[in-house]
Image 1 (tube, rainbow, N blue to C red):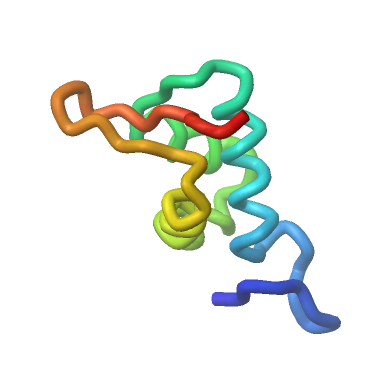
Image 2 (cartoon, rainbow, N blue to C red; image 1 turned 180 degrees about the vertical axis):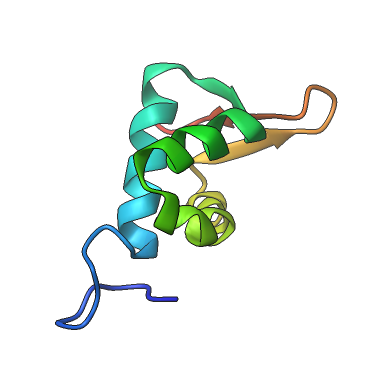
Length: 79
């Protein structure tokens, strides 16, 4: 698992890249289900699905996402 790209890493298979892809989806529609985001990432690149949880964790740490337990949804809370 790579955080930042280097000469040996595929540019689309880093946490930063997957996080930016998920963030672009979340900005369009502010609320998505966990399964919906996972399926969109899977359709984008099946090799990147192992970075899904790590990318969500990064977005949570940055304060850009909130998880709603009652509805089992993720909400974009950034500006």
